Image (cartoon, one colour):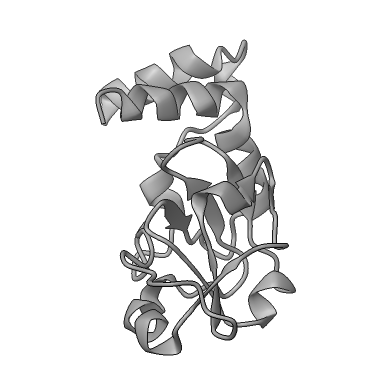
Amino acid sequence: SKDEMDLARELFEHPDWARWELYALEQLVEIARGIPYGIVQTGNAQAEGISTIRCGDVKPLHVQTGSLKKVLPSIEEKYARTRLKGGEVILAIRGTVGNAAAITEKLASQTINISREVAMVPVRESISPEYVALLLQSPGGYRALAEKTKGV
């Protein structure tokens, strides 16, 4: 909406908007996948299972993979929509709201999913996920997310 675009211009404080084209995040994603969050009830941690990225695993511009929770395949298979393929941006939406990271193909080469406290932004192939993650992680991106999460 126009109000959100005006807010973006204000929050990013860029000196020369004439050189930039603004898009809403929704315009940059694969329409079929949308911007979902992941597994609602991950259950007890398993010794073997499907790795699941939780809020605390999302650090600024990377995923800390050392202690990913393993989830039963029978739980994970109900959330195939948020199974990572590589090229997505993930965003912490609980706790430390605003940490963002691009998912590499190497990380997504194993079956991996996200929990409900992480949102997936499956950017279109023509869009750089690293750039989107940088924008979300920037001071302006952080302010925009903070504006959206007030009162939640």
